Image (cartoon, rainbow over all chains, first blue to last red; front, side, top):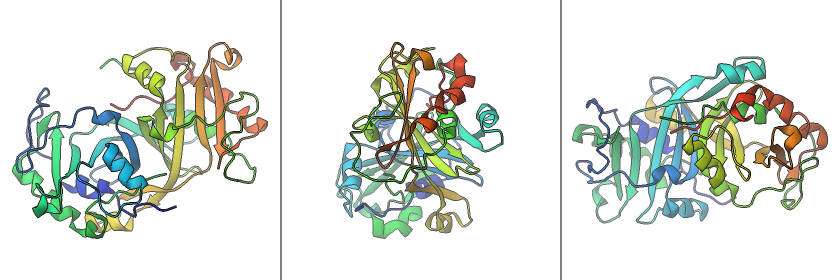
Length: 173
Length: 173
């Protein structure tokens, strides 16, 4: 199958340091520093790109979702994402499921627990974000944009994925 | 947040024994025995309910998707799914990502590898499937419906989730 060979956006996005700002809700209209990105409306309804498990300190299960532009680019096997593509990373605590394990008869099931702070986005705009590979980076903790220090860590982390338009995640068919 | 407290459909769906029929593609118009279910068109575009990791013999990362009826029922916190709800379970091999681990500086990243056989569906029809809790169960291996023996294992496995309309998966916000 012809498809983008792109590595997990999970990585770079996750590697952005979690902002230490106190969380507060109801700030969904605030834009991030540097990139000026607001939370894209309706992102939880976007289609699935892939899933991942990050162990270690992150200790999460995650889903990578894409808006229509991103999904179509993946499915068309494009080497670069067109302007307008947005990729979202949601994560939840990596939680053993006692209920599931009873059914399986052994401890083997891990499900999405409480949502992790730090919903992250990559927004493609080759002109506006020319100095960071054509991508703007965003992170929101309970609706509050991450600070400048945090956001400056995103692009350097994604640099190793340059051959894949700075995106790590492969599309999961 | 008010939402359905429902445990991972991953469990029961996964616990259905994988059919041992030889795989073949291009049989998407075939219906399953017993329940008479065909592969729902466009299911890969459905919205995400949750994600999970099943270790042990299953050794997969999985995504649970829902059609509009299912998603709206979850979000409305309904105790029972209305007729027309369909829940899909997709799974991929649980694959360590060397690329991601290099970025993280340690082995911690697991991504969705090749698709696992056995895409599974639960279809709600309280009349048609009255004898199995109102749910029809389906599994397809490369488009080929699982056989009767396999499908008979699905409902007994879901029985422990009776209090949650026989569905294991919680909605991941």
